[in-house]
Image 1 (cartoon, rainbow, N blue to C red):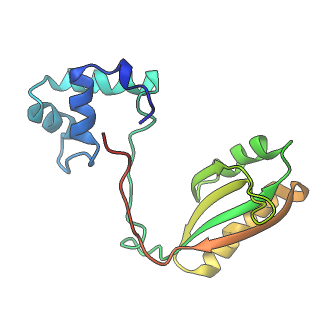
Image 2: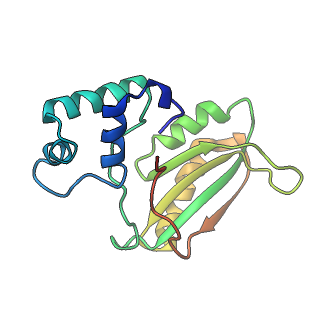
Length: 162
């Protein structure tokens, strides 16, 4: 959710509050949300589409529990990429099917030179290492250094709540 609360009316807010914990696991989740907030399903779907178009919400998608799915080697890869190329290359890295999150972040010199972060998931560390090699291939000579921070526990698995 962006900071576009001003562009939300009471119905939009009710829809966001009803969906922020996840969509109901049923054949017609938008109909169930509509029932919960006493609105028409078509209105709920139109409002969600409008909030996506306006940038009030960024996306509607699945948030899997990677551990439960057998993806136990989850690594946040961090990369020191030349500033002149980080945006262009970051978009290419973010488009890789195995990258679930990709961000540009400020460096914290002298101790933290990394400015590109990409989360990858694998059944084991060998699979993640293969993915890391593929990212390194995309970045090429623009990458000066990298590291991987592996997850050991899920501490939080929710998005922003309003």
